[in-house]
Amino acid sequence: MNRFLKLQGSLFDSPRKHLSLFLEQIATLLEAGLPIDIAFRSMGRDNHSGYFPDMAIATAARLEKGELLSDILEDEDKIFNTFDIAIIRTSETSGDLVAGFSQLFKYHKKREALRQKLRTTFTYPAILAVASLITIVILLTVVIPQFEPILVQQKNAPPLVTLMMLSSSHFLMEYGWIAILVIMFLILYFQTPDGKKQFYNRIIKAPRVGSIIESIAVEQWSRGMALLLDRGIPLPKALELGAPLFNNEEMRRAGQRIAKQTAEGRQLTISMAESGHFPDSIIQLARIGEETGNLSIMFEKSADYLTTEIQSKLEAAISILEPLIIIVLGGIVALVVIALMTTTMSLNLMVT
Image (cartoon, one colour):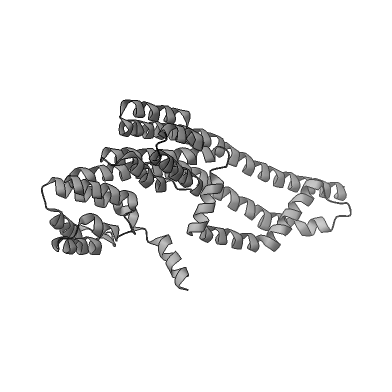
């Protein structure tokens, strides 16, 4: 029961979605010259997102006792991950929290912008797919069964297309509830850590979609690496902190291997090429960064390049997906119409 309640909480309570706004507000307050403890206390009074007021006030109280901000926020693992803490800690050490929070805000804002782009792009196809599915279900469970009594009374066997529609209707009406239960189970399962891991590992191997997912993962990793290196974190440590930025387990392990091999003295771009997850263009940009000593700049350029490429891939995928859904729906509706027409024609022949 407790595990179920915890799962429900993870589904409906996501304070991390407010992190970008929170970081922007903190950066603005610090830039205005407020001390860090007063800035957090002010956030506790003004923020109304639900989770952040108590966290901000508690953080301010601990700051007044002399605790380090990075140590305090490390306990708030519900919203701050190891990547966020690394940025805050290095900024805290260098005495430049304003720049640290500002850059972290920009990083999360760009990630959120990409996620919003994905949601916007797939909203219409998703609605179209759901509407098509509902239409097909209605045709098979409401329309087709109305003609079955007439077909049963015929002496001759119904046409093949009619028999196909009737069989599909019987199957859906008798076993459709099983499909609903399976779908509900999969939705809940894919919300769990193990389910998410399996989902990402499978979807990344899917044609076209896998390429988009992989590009998104590399974009997030590249942008995170650019920020880590820009804050003065050494490359091996930055690679170690950047590996968890990958969403799927396979790429995360590849990131960890790259971090380990780089720490042992191996060239970064060689490890990236051997992993098989990085486009040649990104490897070339990283190689230029290695040679010129501007890896952070090249990683940022890589992320911007991938953002543009992802948008192009999304547009190409949608240009195929939308007509495909329409064709499938139209094909099924056409089959139903043909089945009804052949049935009507056969009845007319019997009458004549």
